Amino acid sequence: QKEVEQDPGPLSVPEGAIVSLNCTYSNSAFQYFMWYRQYSRKGPELLMYTYSSGNKEDGRFTAQVDKSSKYISLFIRDSQPSDSATYLCAMFSGGYNKLIFGAGTRLAVHP
Amino acid sequence: ETGVTQTPRHLVMGMTNKKSLKCEQHLGHNAMYWYKQSAKKPLELMFVYSLEERVENNSVPSRFSPECPNSSHLFLHLHTLQPEDSALYLCASSQDLAGGGDTQYFGPGTRLTVL
Image (tube, rainbow over all chains, first blue to last red; front, side):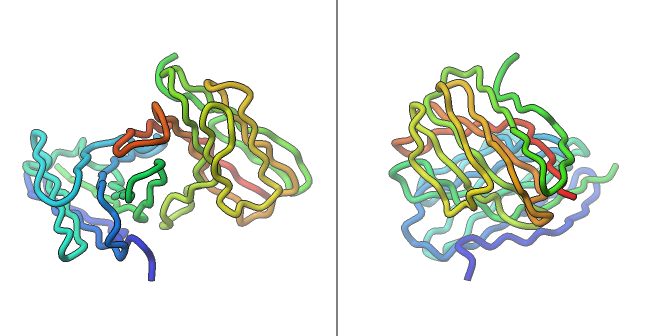
């Protein structure tokens, strides 16, 4: 079983839709959860970072962590064509900075 | 230049060639990383350096050889590669290794094709 599972998509939605991206994980020691966005021909950039369970909101983006279910989500409200990218979840347990990544979900928002 | 830069952006090499990938970070960070990104696979951590010392070697074949001459520069020397080594190689840096949530900043990657 992979440590982190993420549906690769692609996910295609119309502009303005609410997008839900998800990851499940198996290691209950994970405490720190991140979402990276990767545009084509670019490196990943940190989008959201959450510690432990709960929600975090930043503009149109909301990150949710449910540690009891080992499930994390990223919601994008009022999606825009500029949100078209691959979204990678990542997590680690602490200590030194070894991130475990999901495979990424490719999102396409069409006008 | 700002952030993390990588050169070359694209590289095509034969299995008998020797080449090097270069990474430079302009952020004053102390830790640097090499990752491999293959299609539909998670990023694989290859090497980690902290203050120019290697702290992680993630069972990477010896045909990949990292070098960190100072905290701003990281190289990945390649020799006798295999076609399955074709991938996007990403460099990243972070302020430090320890502690939770040290954000890693990624470069744009080198797209490597091994013929």
